[in-house]
Length: 279
Length: 169
Image (cartoon, rainbow over all chains, first blue to last red; front, side):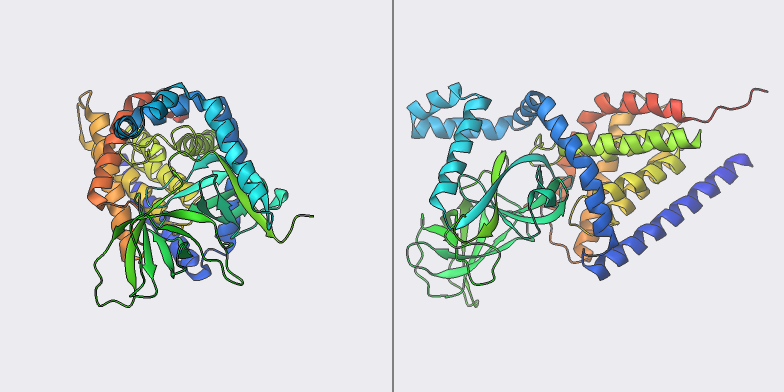
């Protein structure tokens, strides 16, 4: 008898929890991520952020080891490609330590910061990645207290990374360019042909050119187009054209890009906090 | 007792979330991220039954949802169902083998990722995996099975401490 009671109680609990979850889904859809649930999310981020940062710093070698361990197959492919391309580079690659890599990355960021005098930057560090297999985001160690706000562009030494989508006092969440929810107005650097880049979750980015007759060739560099009131400033490198789709009857021409940024090993980044000359 | 229990469970959610997003965050298995909170949910459900499994699944799923830009409540629904189902199935097994926990983690993660992906698509969310949902589910399930020997004993040990003391007759 007691077992049946327990089973009934468990089923009742599940029914209540599922009802509550369905109500939450409904509230979230109606408020479009701007309601009380978003505030609770920011609260959780405020708690988790410092912990992530602490754990990332303390256990970084372990994390690097695990990341390397689970990516053995892709690392092997990278190594063989490097062997073919440049034996000298491969030799240097073997000698690279975590500190020299970090140093190099910071130098690139500094160079970028100096070369773009029209933008104001804040240097941030990645503290964690989004928990879902259905979203491509990272957490950074700066938030609203350090001047960050929603929709600020995020850049790495190599190029565009994404934009800030959620901010708590001391941490923020960045939506990466490869996420399907990401869309960026872009142009081909050589001829100015414009279009829209969207992520597909994989290694390549989809670039739909507005002009179906646009001249585009393999290896063309693509940069942000930047327009008045837009999220991204003009001229930030995104990637190069690696695949062309046959011209069809669609309203746009589709090509595929390989982004300059390696989204699997983000560490130090720049957040564009303002535009106009530095004071 | 109830406060201590709730506190420990909340601590388990936070710990799982921090591990999932920091130390194991970049350690993907063929592109699949570790589902640490789901592994903990399954381990708790197997040891403590469907009610605690569902309750913990709901809490951890909701915490995970609130940290993403994805629809809030979807992971909570998925983990609640997984927690309850695993607890109910475990109750039917008289003598589980040594492989049973890993097999359950594999099956639960596979079903959980498939369920989440299918509901997301129904709600108009585009899959972010960049490959088929089934492949994503298979690799995530393999990852959970690999994590079982490390997480399962710890969670089971903690689960036994959470049990309310029974009066001796």
